Amino acid sequence: MSPARRWAAAALALTALTPAACSTGAAGGEGGDGRLDVLASSPPLQHVAEVVGGEHVDVTGLVPPGGDSHDVELTAAQVGALGEADLLVHQSGLQPSTDDALEVSPPGRVVDTAGLADLDADPHFWLDPLRLAEAGELVADALAELDPAAAADYAAGAEALAEQAAALDAEHARALAPCRGATLVTSHEAFGYLAGRYGLRQVGIAGIDPHVEPTPARVRRVVDVVRDAGVRTVFFEVSTSPEVTEALARELGVGTGVLNPIERAGEDEDYPSLVRRNLDALTSGLVCDGPPGAGEPSNS
Ligand SMILES: [Zn+2]
Image (cartoon, rainbow, N blue to C red; front, side):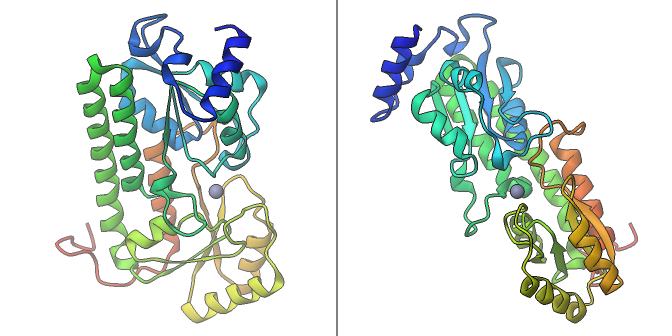
């Protein structure tokens, strides 16, 4: 499509998404290498698109290696690629740059997963594997509309993602059952969905935004919580500065642990293994002395 036509299509899309107007021939798996071009706005959503789309899709992440899902700035080339893509899988509200680019350079289809994040002000739904699996259903539906011939494969991909999530959920339920009610003190308040599902109480040192330094009042409150709840470990986020957390841990005489909010690109492990790493950190750092899960011996 010529630049002039693309801008015309973009103007149209401000009032109504017009997928056919932007088709480059790849939709339906007919042109090019026969695969659908899918863009994903974060590493967890890239995982979803890869598992669901399998051999029928080429998935490209919008977050550059080492970059953070919260504050991606799309390049001009990425904005152009967005307009050529068959599908974007994103989460509106998480990345203003992508939200803006969608208005001028819309892809064939858009899956918005923002509805899966329903905790007030907390976008990190992907840290609960069962919620992430729900994104798989949305992606399977969109891919099936673009490429009806492979609809059964996309449904099977969503099912595979759901099974992966169910396995992770079972591991969490078993391992965290003795930790029910434990207080999870973390630098980046990103684990609300996980905490809610497995009965943990999350207390953020900095709050939701990892780039905001905690106020002295907030630090004092965390100190009180740590003392009152007998917390053994304060967690900080991988790849951000651990200074505040470490200073606090030293002052309180407790240990530190590392949690990964799985929002940076360029990790050398996939989503399930990063989730399992977080689970290991939780079970070794939380106070877990409650009764073990029903039907599961505690010494297994
Ligand atoms: Zn985050």
